Image (cartoon, rainbow, N blue to C red):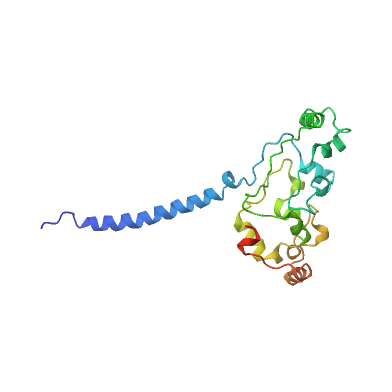
Length: 219
């Protein structure tokens, strides 16, 4: 039987298979880049809000404590979105004619809550408790970033499972002093002092153990 394909086709076949492997690898790499891109994770993306609340002004310039607005952070799994009355405690006296604050005044007049867009919103299948993290020495800025420098709020971290696991596997790299958790300048003890042994001692003091079982977050 005569040969149908020229011998050179063997080379073409090998090159095609080899090239296909690179195409598949490239496609997977591109997919991973997309999944981790700001387009998907919304890291660094400013979300539209009913009123342009500036953490930089309220936290950085004025020095408001996180708990003034997020009243439930220490005692609840949910930090809490402040009611309009919290805003009006100050703005019934300050900037009362500001056009930017008209949605706040309208909300106060009508009793209709402001529809704030949550910037840090975990999927429903993931459980997160603010109170336990604060009591274990995880500062607000560890997860939310330097809010005192944010004119408008954006997401500092991906909130991906890998990001959570980085801390759960090595809590000594992220835990700081409890009395500093609400400070916008707080740093993990290991970062501030460069003493990893002191950080490990802090884990023992706060009774922190590495928790990486699925049921810790997926309940």
